Image (cartoon, rainbow, N blue to C red; front, side):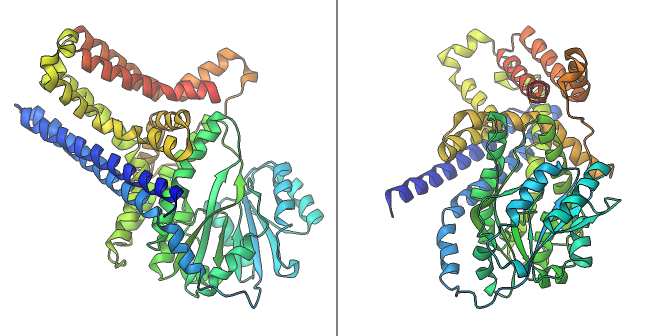
Length: 518
């Protein structure tokens, strides 16, 4: 094994060790709470914390499995490549670009690049599936379709979201043997996408191939957001692909049309890609992930845009959980690991949001309980003969520290402490938005977050009022935590006061980020 490989392997082992230690620490503190419980109230807190520790332990251990397995993906993919033969025929390809109220100038630029694809032009056809509600955009796209000779399909109602637009074009217009999908904001950077992907389809059971999706370089905020996708595509996707559960991520992928038809098209949900991946697996088709970037998406530069994206993701993930149980997915899969993977995917953002908020609420209960360390004052806290309480306090921090792992991992794998900290802070800033999305799914209300992009042209006072109104729930929650922190400090509960005050600061970041990044 080369020196570089050794370093990468060591990094994987350290990651596994970190997640394992955090899981043990969380369970250890749960046991401690049962040990000191002396009332029904304390036992309820202990049980609640134990359940959250179990959730954290599950995701920490499972994440370590993903990180470890991903190290071996290159060898797995190379084994597949070694069996491939040169192409003896070149099938017809549909390139489909879905769009919704996108800037026509940006779309035009990306269409120009797509039409430079390294493939026989006679066997390649471009379609634009437009659900835009702006008549000006529709008119502009009509002109572009004549200028660049592509098929333009516009719908007046957005039935089925992006999935509905794709199904409409594939079922009613496109007739090609394979389907390549690129989002309207994605700029093709490697013209060999189709040529590179087609050989894998010599496996007649292969339904789709997903390639790595990343954002273009932007500012510090957008580059930090890119880390979200980087973790998924660098570590989770390879591990899932080894178990035939690679996620079709909605674009930068190639699909076999016959498999698409067998599955019944894209399930018309908010996140059609996850549902399509699941249905592909359930219908006995294979999937593959190729860890190479062929197109770069437009960077997310505003916090509002990120919030809307995360709302949609968590709304869709929560929908997927109900879909999975309705379909009895655990019965149609022979692999327990695959079943666990689907459940982990559905619960993922809920773990980073709903569980996070529940832990915060339980923390309040513990601070004002009879746990010994919750009532030592500052001078007692720094005395060495109170080392037991100090250790107990460290155990109490274990759950939250597990959320700091992105900081360490971002430094190890992406050479940046600052972006890791931003990822950590964003998980708190987005916690309530994601939680509201999960609740919206359960009570079946409109799947959208009604935040309008803020513009400074309206004046600073108007903008500030708009920000305060948009983040009123987060502000109220943070103020409650600050108030409880003050009460704890007034009772000489220095540890509890600092802890709740820190939580208050973290949940205030929603307002701070909206003010700073729009």
